[in-house]
Length: 218
Image 1 (tube, rainbow, N blue to C red):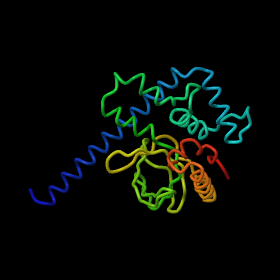
Image 2 (cartoon, helix red, strand yellow; image 1 turned 90 degrees about the vertical axis):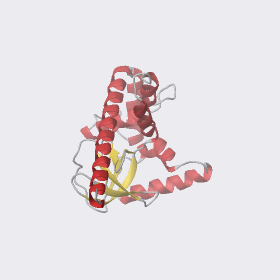
Image 3 (spheres, one colour; image 1 turned 135 degrees about the vertical axis):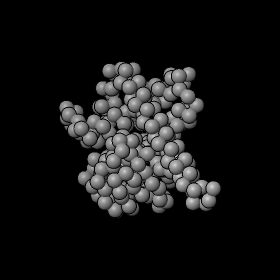
Image 4 (cartoon, rainbow, N blue to C red; image 1 turned 180 degrees about the horizontal axis):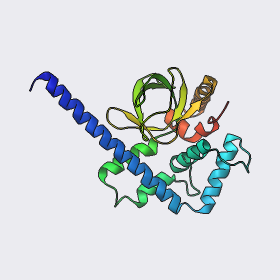
């Protein structure tokens, strides 16, 4: 087999593994969402919505917009800590460990550490974006669980939650536009201040507990 054929076969193999990984990630995300909807009691849901509204500065009686509701459901699954101190996704993994495959559990561990994070678009096409994170300017390529990405322009900032697959990361859940880079600057400043008090604090750990303060800000 010539070199060109070998490269084509390798690329085909990588794309097949990418699509399989994306399919598995979406299935796991859906199963976890269904589990949360079935098992989260009313007290937890009321508590979570109260905290979400309070942190975002929303009126206690305010109805969520479609985007706010999507962000809430995503946050409630991955970041909200229950009264017992666990996330709903960690409870899903724990209570379904015997039914999940080893690849599911490995991918689940990536979900556990994921966070809504600010990213800047460098290049955009319909299916893939090249972007950089706020803290480290290393590039990555990303696709979305629903296929086509929303319109994005180079230089724009967005909040996304992503996990690595093979060639591309995959964004899970809503993609939230950041209207002003000042929001990102404030996040980085708050992180730097927190690091002075807690030197071992990582950017991802900071995001897991603090990103909600910065969502939907003007």
